[in-house]
Structure formats: structure tokens, C-alpha cells
Picture 1 (tube, helix red, strand yellow):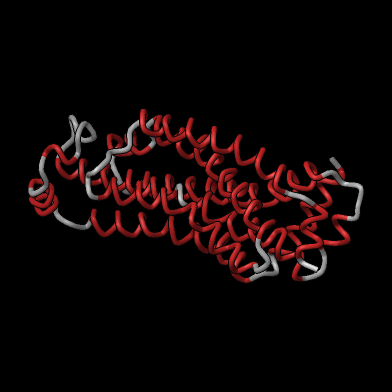
Picture 2: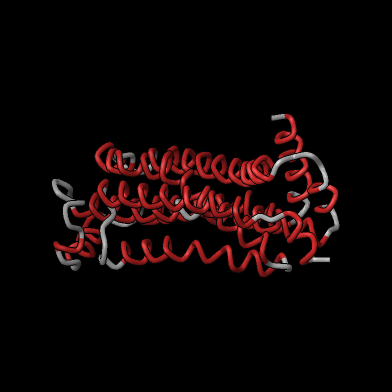
Amino acid sequence: MDKIKTIIGKEWAEVFKNRMVLFTVLFLPLIMVALPLITTAVTNNLTEEIAAEEAESIPDDFFGEMCVGLSEIDCTNVYMLNLYTLMLMILPVAIPVTIAAYSIVGEKTSRSLEPLLATPITTTELLVAKATAAVIPAILATWIGYAIYLIGIRFMVNDVVFARVVAAEWLIAIFIVSPLLTLLSVSLALIISSRVTDPRVAEQLSALVILPLMMLVIGQSVGFILIDQRVILIIGVVVALLDAFLIYLSVRLFQREVILTRWK
């Protein structure tokens, strides 16, 4: 455990010197939280008549069961806020990519990997430490951002709309599925980082894991798919299975001697 703690501290000391990492961890959550708050504030300044006219122009089947029992303006608010909550799930995927992708190949380019691999630490301990160093900032940033988002929204919408925003499926998404997504992102980034020789290539390839989430956001925004508790649970199960596979694969593919000789 002491070895893992030491490497985590070393990782944070190294990666947070990188401005791109700092921007991703600090400013990306602020942007993702500010966007729904500003949009909701602007929307609420519209008159109820205008909001109702806009909502009536959208087919009833567009919202499915999302707006059952809601007024037009409440339905619009719930739809938009659900979309923004889904967008917040990009944070636990985007934030750790930069950290984890730099984790191995970045150390190789800075000539600090060889001394680390020469220590008696096992491969499992090494990967656990590097994964933890990327996972913790991502999860904390996501949860803190979500808390700020909820506090801001609470003062902007009525009780009915807020109850839909904190519905069970979204709490499951943020507090259970999001950490699983973080682990997925980190595992994939570590695998890629151990196989390439350029930190920029590692970051670009690792960022591809964001694409499925972007497709969900686009699908929700155009009404192609409406995220409910069943969809969230399916996503959670699929991601958990992928996590188990990628964790196993990352250990199998991380060959200390080969990594050193390939980059000599």
C-alpha cells in the first residue's frame, strides 16, 4: 500500500505540472456546469406563453413518458436538464484520459520510467497506482460539479422539475455508472499509453472512448433515444463487463522488459 501511495503522489506531482491536465481537471467541469445553469436562467426569463408555444411545436411522442403529468414549460425544463445531466457524464471519461495517457509514455519520454520499473513494485501495484491517480481526480471533479449543478438548479426550477432532475436513474448514472466509465477510460488509456511512443498519440487515441457518450447525447437531443432507468442500468452492466476485461487486458499487455526495449 505504501508503494501505491508513493506512486500516486509522484503521479500527481508530475501530471499537474501540465497545463492541459490542469485545464481538463479544473476548467472543464466549470464549463460543463456553467452551461446548464446559464441556459436554464435564460430559459426561465422567457414568458410561460412563449415557452408553451415552443413546446407545442414538438411532437408529443418526442418526449415519450418523460413529460407525463407536466406542463409544457416544466416538460421543456426537464428535457433540457436531463440532457445536461447526461452531458456531465462526459466529465469522468474526458478528465482521466489526459492523466492516464501521459502516465506511461510520458514518463518514458521524460526518462523517469526506467528507474520506476527497476523498483521491486509488481506490475499490478504499478497499474493500480497509476489508475487510481487518474480515477480519483475525475470522480471528485464529476461529483463536485454535479453538486454545484444541483444547488444552482434548485433555485431556478420548481419542486416538480427538480424531482425529475434527481430521479433515481440520474443518481445511478452519476454515482455508480460514472465511476465505472472513469475506470473504463483509464484502463483503455493505460493500455494505449503502454503500446505507443508519443504522449500526444496516446491522448488522441484514448479520447475516442468519449464518442459513444457523445452519440448518446446526440441521440437524446434529437429524440432518437430517451434515457431512462432501464437504459442507464444496461449501460452500467455493459461498462462493468468492459472494465473487467480491460483491467485484465492491461495487466497482460503491460510487459516491463518489452516496454523498455521498444523505447530504447
